[in-house]
Length: 462
Image 1 (cartoon, rainbow, N blue to C red):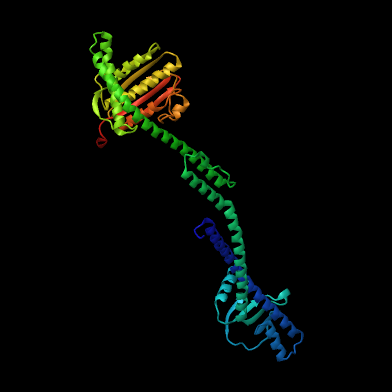
Image 2 (cartoon, rainbow, N blue to C red):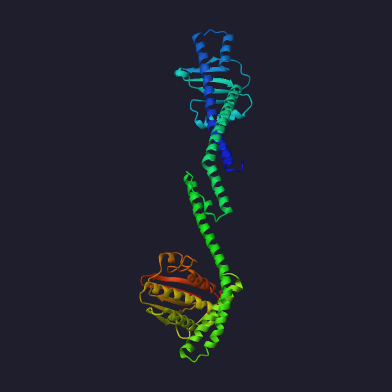
């Protein structure tokens, strides 16, 4: 129980209530002491009035008056004259004098605490103002044993009442906290445990019901987190299934492409000029497809192998990509432009860089075809001191809002209706493997521009 929230709250409540009662107890005891001394002054004044009324009283009556007032001596000052009205023998000398006429609250509290913790019986002198201004002052001497005993009785009563009040207050707060905080928190924990057991089950997602604002916000935040996590888990499950499917398809596709590769050997022997011109392109495309299938099978899942970096002529790869896309254009009015500096070489994996540029150019072509308007696709490059930059731009309709929001996210960043969104995700991953970055520079009604940044040198050289 002590480790629970409600149990600790109960203990803290008792401690704080007792602390508050202690802060009340100290001035209360000081006030009780003051009232006690004032009452003794009043009794002594009444006893002195009896003597003033009849100046001739015997010793026995005087002793009884002092005994009833619980004092040894009474001095009354009237008309600038100090008069010992009543007196009796004192058992010991006067230890201290207390003037109640001008005592401040802190003086009263300090005197009370010293008297409360001083167990020795002492004789003290107390000075005060007479009741109803019957004189200038009244002075008495008395023992402290009775005063201390009365203060202890009063203090114990206050402490007992404080304990009762603390227990009642703590119990009420304990019940309130359990109802308002602990029970809703336990409900949230129960939902979390249930969701952890089967996160793919949407029925286990928490439904906010708390009336307390902070708990409601916590439940809503947990609900949002669970919804996003469930969607992410489903997406990862689909990706895992896709990885297995890709491995199976790659296995069979590799066999098919291997057979097609054998046929291309005979096609290259044809005397037809058009066939001779297109045959190398076909052979290169089939070879790339076979290599991709083998890489996928080698890793057993849809992950990219590390790039094999080498220096290559960029214009050769760009020309291969554009030649392939020109064949796919057909009757659509799309023009292609190349602006690659002569002899520009970059350090990259040839196959992976081909796929990156091919994905970007293909997306541009498909966007222009979907718009049913003429367009242009251009590929340019420039060299800086620390990196190479390859730019692919088009005059298409621009990216849709959803594609911009999830640009490089698989299955969410599709740039056209019905697209899977894998092309940009794969391209970004391949460029990151080179230590570079694929970035969207601009998109809008006037077209879209992507830029590939390939760093020069190794990390150790930077």
